[in-house]
Image 1 (cartoon, rainbow, N blue to C red):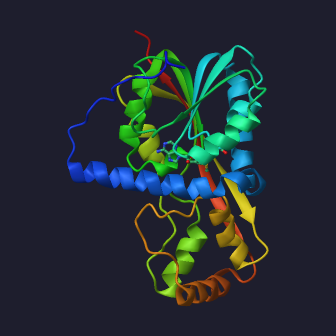
Image 2: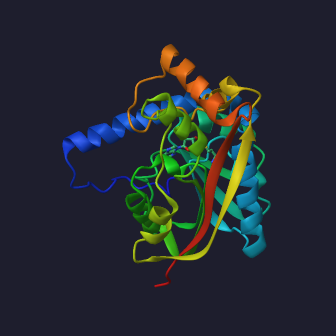
Length: 279
Ligand SMILES: C[S@@+](CC[C@H](N)C(=O)[O-])C[C@H]1O[C@@H](n2cnc3c(N)ncnc32)[C@H](O)[C@@H]1O
């Protein structure tokens, strides 16, 4: 494991306030996923479909080999779906509890390493990994260009990055219900597809992209909101206050007025294959 880990993470010329805010937000996100870790596999049905789709896409075009870094690995879905024994995985996540579940699950899955760290500040050496994969995790990073340049740094020349990222248009029905209820939406908004695919650092280029919508259908309105909370994904990226009872009731009413008893959430996911130029 030590061969991968970089002792000194490059200092950035940013203000103390910005660093503190980023650290606080990362802690908040990690705590949300920590709380959900033990039930994540039971409730993360859409996330499971997405990681299976990404795995199929990879298998159609390539074979992962060498050192594979999974960013935001959660409970280890991607490593558990990998069939090639010639891989050494670095499962990296902000959440210690997610990593704990992943460790148990991947016990008999060949060479597996576990690192608790932030995608935006990877404790890894330059050009040290052969492939990077990530499913349903990078939408939590607020500045795609910054995250992508960190990925470019640790990836070896000619290496591949395979991503599945939830993008802006997701959950538009819930946003609309918020608007009609007369409140600003408390549902997270994520960077859009263009930000992820057109702001690549110079060393990276996009070779493949597709978009797909995954629909979660719930029994009732409560089930919709619970499906987000149950997987640890209800932490507000925009620092909004928790939902109050009166807001909940108005939101529920606004949702019913708009969509009657059709309870669904659309996850808009962009799948991308990105390559790093050779030397
Ligand atoms: C929705 S889960 C996806 C987990 C897994 N990839 C899957 O497909 O099931 C998102 C994961 O990303 C992690 N995460 C969020 N922001 C992160 C960051 N900045 N750096 C590393 N991991 C992060 C969370 O802790 C969580 O485990």
